[in-house]
Length: 106
Image 1 (cartoon, one colour):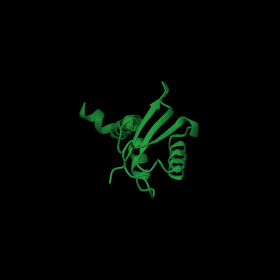
Image 2 (cartoon, helix red, strand yellow):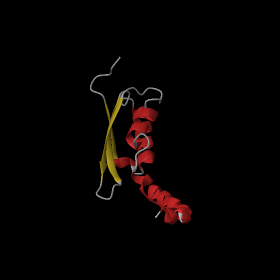
Image 3 (tube, helix red, strand yellow):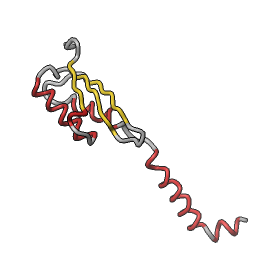
Image 4 (cartoon, helix red, strand yellow):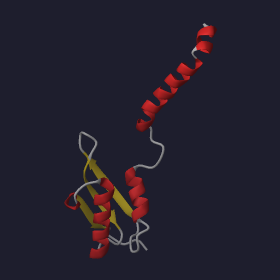
């Protein structure tokens, strides 16, 4: 049996690598798109805390999102957040609802 592994070491290694590569897309190595979106949007001038709920369809595609953000009471900032979300999630802007926080946090 050891002779078999020695003789086929390269093929066994390639098979193992192929199995690993097959499962890599399903592994989560970093932040989700939502988390990355929040971190980016919080860096926009005039935006504070941000919360987001994303609606995914059965096929995993984004179908819409609701975003609550400090600063979204300003129409310019609201439009910037809407446009950014539409781009980040690949949906039309009419599928993005941006709301301002009930009370701005100081």
